[in-house]
Image (cartoon, rainbow, N blue to C red; front, side):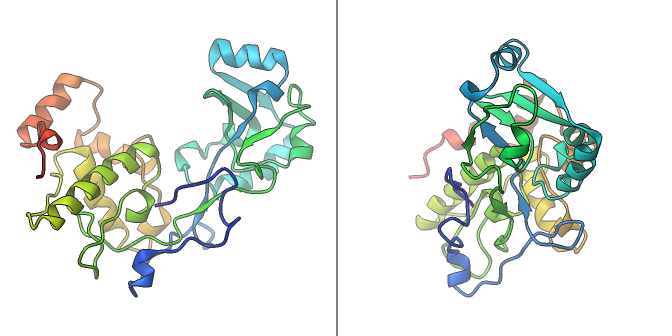
Amino acid sequence: GCAMCITRCPTFGGRVSIAERLGIQEMKAVKPDGSLGSMSGSCKLNKDSLDKGLVRQLDQTGVALIPLPKDVAEHKKELLAIKSCQQYALPAFAENVILLDTGHAKLMAPFYPLIELRKLPGLENARYEDPYAGGMGNSMRFLAMSPRDDYLKVEGADNLFCGGEKAGILVGITEAICTGTLAGHNAARHALGKELVELPRSLAVGDMIAHVREEMQTEEGMKKKFTFSGSVYFDRMKELGLYSTDPDQIGKRVADSGMSGFFDKRVT
């Protein structure tokens, strides 16, 4: 997938795809308006550049909302459709500048012109921390996804595996960790001539890997974004009874699937 630097693509030109170099036809996600890909949905502001009162609010509550003038909010609604994280594409994110305390101040917008941002109370001296060009744009994603099976092996290549956003319209770090773990594990198994492993669909990760692959075979599915943290896949988890915050219940489900301690076992 995409290892995003602080300057964001395409500062140094388009990324090189191993699958594409092998002649494998890759896929592009589609936004509701028909345009391709999607843009990262947030930036970081340097916390030290914010008003002290705003910093105090972030330190105490973890969040700060700055209401926007109505005409600005109407324009900002147009940006919601371009975001990768559709669970945050809600009216409140258009009607306010929303800051979250993540060490820096996470600005929940794909980009925001710096000259306009500095007109808002508390942000008169705001400075972008990540990406540096957050006043102009952000990274473009989901433009080169590889066809793959549920082992996360790229179809058409004998020894290439993929995870994260390369493996489908999977938004988020948890999704990247889960798919990357399985892809790396299966790559090692393949190198040793061992049978590859799928995660069962009785587990949320296994179901997501398979479900996203199936959805990407359809025109409508290519317009969706999938994440454990909200939107359409979160609804699916609840419908299937896969969503739980009870560690014992989750542990039993993993045990019943035969996967307890699976990644603790050495491949070699």
